[in-house]
Length: 409
Image 1 (spheres, rainbow, N blue to C red):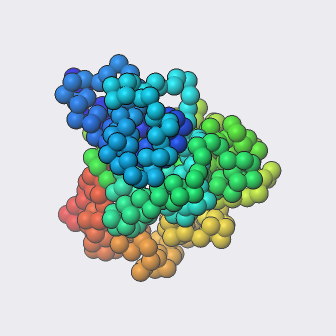
Image 2: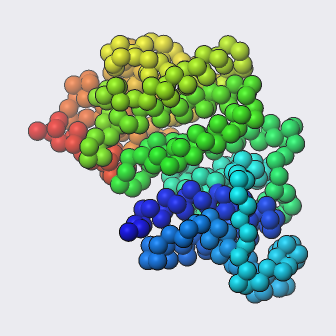
Image 3: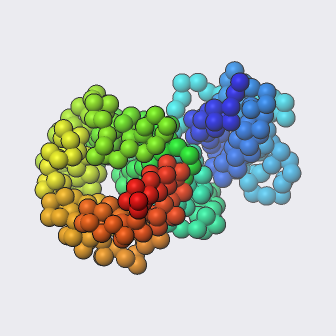
């Protein structure tokens, strides 16, 4: 029996490929994205009841193409109809849209979403939706903005791409280099959502993490000498290697200090470490290389006690200088606490009060951990409960409440 979860997985897997095929054929990204969304809704309803078709991607392409035909017929006066009419000529309402096989449009779609006509923030948001398969709500959580704001940003980005007359093809080298930073940031956010989901019943979304790694490999194959591309791929591999040990038998969160490191993926660690070793000192230092170096130090350690915390704290200090970010400061506070004691880490956290993390769960969760280490049981319980109240992730909420209950007894 086909479950809703099975269907959702297939739709996330196929959506970027379908959108790429439609855009390559019909040339109107805005109209194709709208048609794809309607096809996805139809599939979500029909596949659960009738079963998944033999060719899911072809089914989606055909249904979305028919939506485009309907759009042309219903809105003949609009310029969008003129742009797509030639491509749609001869495609009747019952004619299936041929689905190209062996063609992966993901990278081309990735760079299209990062078109220079679109603001950097909207580039990231649009790519997360079109290529990463994240919902608008998940993207809004990643950007710390309300969902309606993010929905408007995505809509505006599609309009800007259409107005710029962007072609569905990889940009020339100079322009491609300018877009690369945004592309890497997009893949970083997709991976983070896969490694620790912002909401839902599952701690991780392995499909998203795997897709981010696949796309990062694709970019690395095209740009093997770029230090930040290699750094990002290494960071993903070194981090994802721990995923098998991050949850218990019931899906509960297992913190780093309590993980069975024998369950970590040794092959992924070896590959990631080799990438870090090859790039450090041979390319301009960037934030992904620094984060990969930190991840490698965690993966090399036999346990938490033997981790090289002074080196990690130093790398976070460099990272904070290279790419200032409240999350970097948050992580540095943990490392500093391991070196100089919890009071030193708590002092760093005060810099984040009133900032972008003030209303999120991560700040009180880290503060609770450091207060617990400092012996302030009441403060730790209060902050664990506050963090649990703020997170939309069920496994994180259960873990935080369990910590609070254990301390409160």
